[in-house]
Image (cartoon, rainbow, N blue to C red; front, side, top):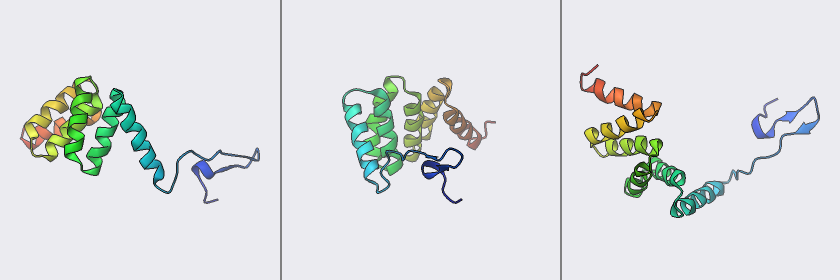
Amino acid sequence: MDVMGDKATLLDTGRFVQPSDRDESGDGEVVDEARTRLAAQAGDVEATSVLGAMLLRRGDLDGAEPLLRAATAEGDRAAANNLGVLLHQRGYTDDAAGWWRIAAVAGSAAAAHALGRYHRERGDE
């Protein structure tokens, strides 16, 4: 059987897995972003962080930076890590390391890894 995930059939019971709410045409991503943007505008810190990450992945550094800074100011460790990534992409590696350190201390494994690589590249094992 080649079908897996949401389209899998539960053969023993004859029941089917319900289809997901995701729209495979790509419209679902637009709707998700719009919902996230509205939540961020309403002050939801997690949504602000997620929206900043979306824009960062898309390469919109100018749009992502204020969102990530705002979420970081509210204590979001994922935003601090992503702000480090953004600053690293812009060439501000020392500033990036500072944000990675903050996120790593807050428990972000990704930030700890990035901070370790930053130090290793400078010869500080």
